[in-house]
Image (cartoon, rainbow, N blue to C red; front, side):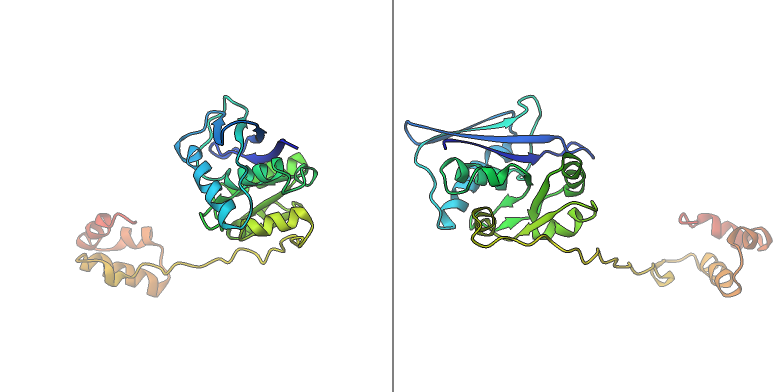
Length: 235
């Protein structure tokens, strides 16, 4: 089949509008034309995708390729469509079954080696994919974020070949099981880092030692210390 359709998502603020990647192969001199209001980073994806497909040991079709990112009036930016474009080209050239791409959305930037790199704005795309009733394929680095949309089936891949093997049924990727996002607490600022403000620091230490309210301490402290407290912007 010389026509394929792959589902993806754009990013506009906190929204993730649907984008359909349409790929058509025609006879003629080898070329690749991209339409659908792509910005510079999206236009450059044709070179990334070509190298990723070739370096993955797959065949890049030597035909006239037309890529349409629909809807045409929606601006598209970033490298988030690379994976969808690559799968669309492989599907149109009969290297990936077209039917396996109907119920899944794909996000991911491709390295020239075929590795799948993380992208931004995965959570809104995950929520939108769940609402649309589709599963989502993302880079492994984005899998935990995508799993925040509970009830969504997420497939995490590290390389284009993993995605191809999954859709061909050679080595299906198991749905990702979330381990939960780890919260890394940041160290609190230390008063030793404050230059000067001797009286204000002394007042803060007294408040901390006696579990006093800073406002109460300010009210009852001598005027010099009170003025010093007013100079500490963080209060």
